[in-house]
Image (cartoon, rainbow, N blue to C red; front, side, top):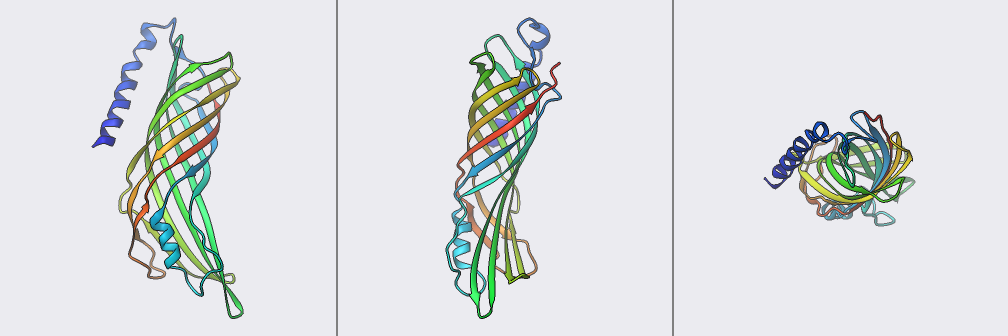
Length: 248
């Protein structure tokens, strides 16, 4: 219910702001990254995944692995579009949507007679995001994004694949029964390389991420039917992106 209320508030704020464009054209307009603006960038996400790390300790295939591994941080790419950016005299407000690819890969090896057993693990935390930000200009070519808030629609997947040398022996896949809505808060800087057309944006955010359970989906090998508390806590995410804008 809280997440639905947050989405409604963002939508209502966007609807309220749009009429000001025609009422106050001298102080308000679409600048860099207008209706046709888009962006692409690189992200790094920290998280705490107690349930999945516990699975790795207890559910490897073959002899005891040579080393212990655990998931801590994923990396990936973000692509998105700015729905609008409205500029007033002393501040700006933006609405945006994006899709982000975040993955982390781990591997454990063990010798089994004349072969090498490899247990490979992949955690994917891909998600859709909708956000609203408010900022102020600092200098001629630098803006300060005071606060950004958004909702995140996660698509989580955990895969455990086993190999003997180069031959795949098994694959176990886990997914949640339904995707949970989470949220984040952020701040950052925008550097205008070519005003109204090209800018570089850096964002630091904290993601409030939690998943209660993921369930076995694979049919190639039977494993535990579920993993409890797979993602117990979110963490810091940093993103650097290049914005391309077509102002109106």
